[in-house]
Image (cartoon, rainbow, N blue to C red; front, top):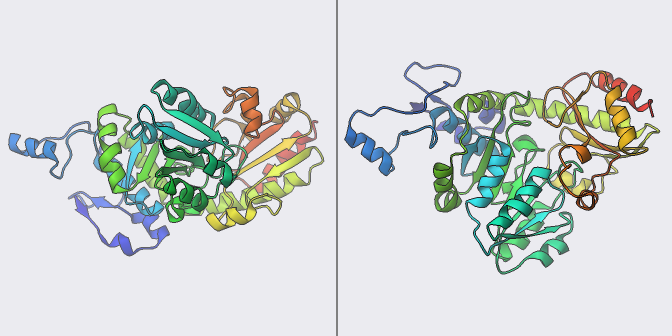
Length: 396
């Protein structure tokens, strides 16, 4: 396949459209979709050399031309040396941890995490003798105090789900590196269009590409962006032998979505800010969380790390679960869903969905209350979104 190496000099929007592009002898303009599990060889000698590491493909569980282009484009957008795609965001998180941790190791993670990630850290890893400490991700002193000689990984989301806390990537990275630990950042809420954690010291970046990278709620996917030594020493062998591989079709869908990522994220940010301002004026809303609003407690840090506030707004209403459900059921335009990052606006009650498996104490410690609602603000007209939220809030 023909490969264009000029992309290293291109700007980000150009990379989003053409980065990593490879063309077959047919010279197609749209990236080719290679729906194949295996590959043929001219001779047994060629097969032998491929399995020894010679350039080329052997089996789609290991690598696929369409998936490779998606991986390279994502690496270019994140400013990462290499990337490896996975079947889902949780596959990316789990692989990035299990590939390098072993019995006796220790991990430190922020308390404001997606519920499934908390499950992997506190339940799955502990089965293999890997201990963990959960800290307030906004408190650098807490990160520092949690470090041990056996600490190998620190993990956090920024912005966090669903409370939109902002972790100081550079500050945490400095603490972790002094302790000899690697830093993994979940960048799904911001996407590489708004934030590039490696520029602030992160060693590994993970995404649920199901979210903003896909952007239309169609196909599952995940990706791990890392340095070449981490890939060589830990990740590559783990992925090859455990098989959390991305479907070539899903890779192609996400690859095409990257072409509009910057444009979409710009609109998501604009719409989310308008929705946040509207919600802040409603009498039945007690608190609005949005990273670029002037009343967000970490707005300065958010603006230092991010070029936009993202597409998620979280707010707390008067009352509790009963009133939150009443608002959700009264919506006529915005859908109830636990997903986010879609062109369609989606509302979630985190306490009973994404964070339902946490104990009530753990939910409260993470800032998730029964009165909290999360809105993934889509690409509709914001006047319609505000009208819908307004009439629903009037029900309480």
